Every structure is written in C-alpha cells, then in structure tokens.
Image 1 (cartoon, helix red, strand yellow):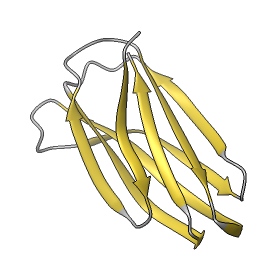
Image 2 (image 1 turned 180 degrees about the vertical axis):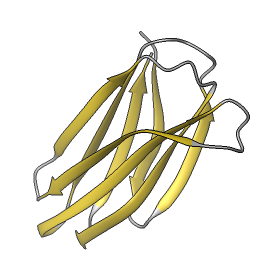
Image 3 (image 1 turned 90 degrees about the horizontal axis):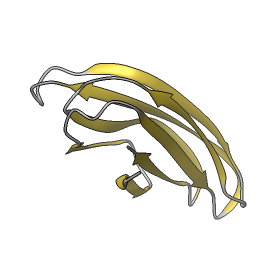
Length: 102
C-alpha cells in the first residue's frame, strides 16, 4: 500500500488535490488537534475524472482536542483525481491533516 499526504496542517478552510490514478480501494484518514481547548473540523473527500467536476466520496467530522484525534473511511471509487475540502475548522491552533492509502 502506498500512502499519500493529501493535506497537511490546514488551519483554515482550504481545498487541495492530487492525481492518484485510477487505483481501486483507497483508505482516507483525517487527523487533527488543537493547541488548547476543544474544536472541530469537517473534511470532505472528493473525486473527479477530469480535475474539474467533483463528487463527494464522504465526509469526516472530527471533535478536536489537545491530543490527536482521527477518523476515516474506505472507498472503492475509480476516480483519477482526489482532493480534500476542509469546509469548517475551529478551535485555538486547530489543524487537520489528511492521508490516503492505496
């Protein structure tokens, strides 16, 4: 299994993407934390065949704290391009990273 970092240390809403090719099973994992107190993050994972029109594969909602928390899902999609869309993030020093294994 190859692991690719899709998004690293996002501290604000952002979108980033990468060409993973049309491999079949992919495992997406979001990890996040805050510098102090609690927070939250919502991350959409999206796929595209042409890097223009995007479909949502799944959404990960994280409750953030000072220790790292994570959640994820597996997808058998055949999209060539994949991106992370951090639609919401809150908390003091909140950050989120997303990796994919395929």
